[in-house]
Image 1: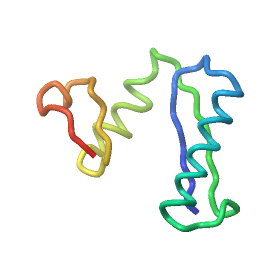
Image 2: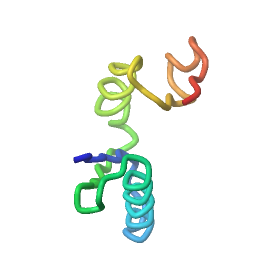
Image 3: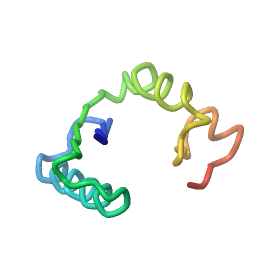
Image 4: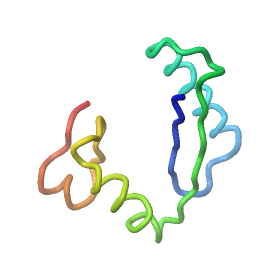
Length: 85
C-alpha cells in the first residue's frame, strides 16, 4: 500500500508508462514516507468511447467530493468550475 491505478486512453508507449510509474513511486515515497517496496502502480487502458461509462461516471462524477484534482472537462466541471488541489 498504497496502490495507484492510472486510467488512460490507449496509445501511450511502455516507456511513457514506466516513466510515469517511476515518477509516481518517487513522489509517493518522498511525500508519504513509504519504502518503494510498499508502492504498486497499475495502468488500465480505456477506449475513448468507453471513458464516460467506465471512468467518468463511476470514478469522477461518482466520487466528485473526494477528488483532490478535478478534471476541467465534463458536465460537473462546466457547471461548478474547476477545483484546485
